[in-house]
Picture 1 (cartoon, rainbow, N blue to C red):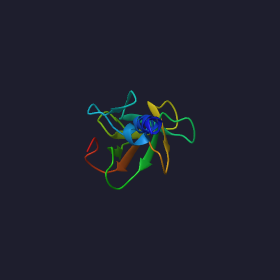
Picture 2: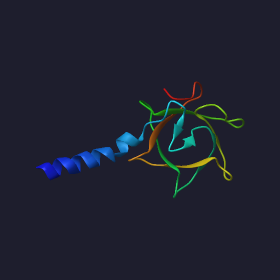
Picture 3: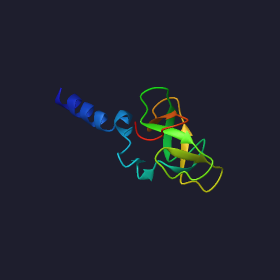
Picture 4: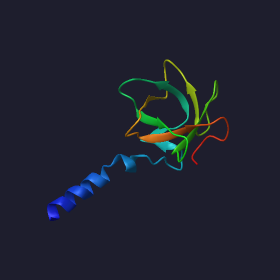
Length: 104
């Protein structure tokens, strides 16, 4: 019984649910969540799931000057960070918006 509680505590501490916290400074895993973003199929910096409610971050796609929290400029090369879209076990959940990007 004691071993199973210990294993449960370790599993809870390493759970992906705990990983989805975007900092108040608009960062995750050392990456500031604004700037130039490249979508990749493998080896991402951050795994992202698009949702319509309860996002960790609201994202607005911009064509230039992505310098505010949640403003992403999608590029094919020289990104600030790389993302991969996933359907399950994301690092963060985002909602695409046309105004008021940032941490909800």
